Image (cartoon, rainbow, N blue to C red; front, side, top):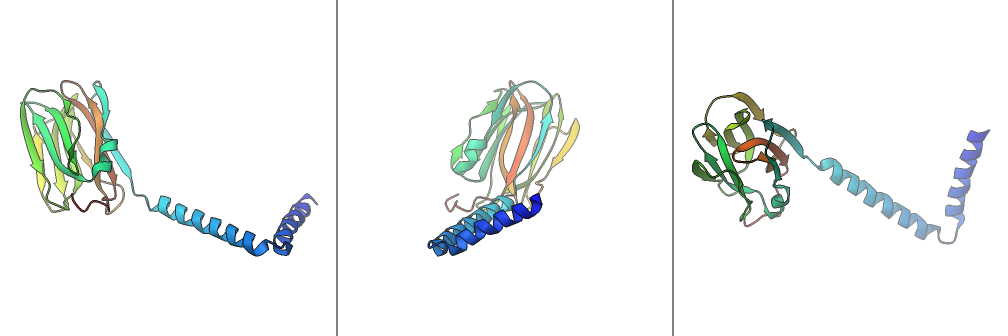
Length: 192
């Protein structure tokens, strides 16, 4: 009996909407609201972000470049290395360099991506600290930094047609650990 009352209650509400003087207006508003909600749901479902990591040891202070991704895609990478470890990192997003993280000892190496080129895979090695990083691009370039020793990792995005958008991790005098964040290539970056 309670089920039939609910059913009748819904019918009464629907009958009220259909019999009301403003029902075409109310139905139009309801339809627009439904369409907007549906479009928003499709946008949310179309998101393709994923995360790999953290790769490395403990310690260090947390860092994240999440805000820099708003400047555009990754366009260059600076990596400082010494005989054993990845010492420091800095990434250029669009035309803006992130804050440098890590130590100051070692040689600074710098690579620039070609216009429209993106990082689609990152591998490396670690033992207590990050020891090696290899960036692979969608143009087939293989960009290695550091020494080939330690525990291996290989990071790729979870979703197809997504790219490395920003990094995070922990650093002190060395890079303790790294996390890799993947998403769609930004569509609004004509000058990058």
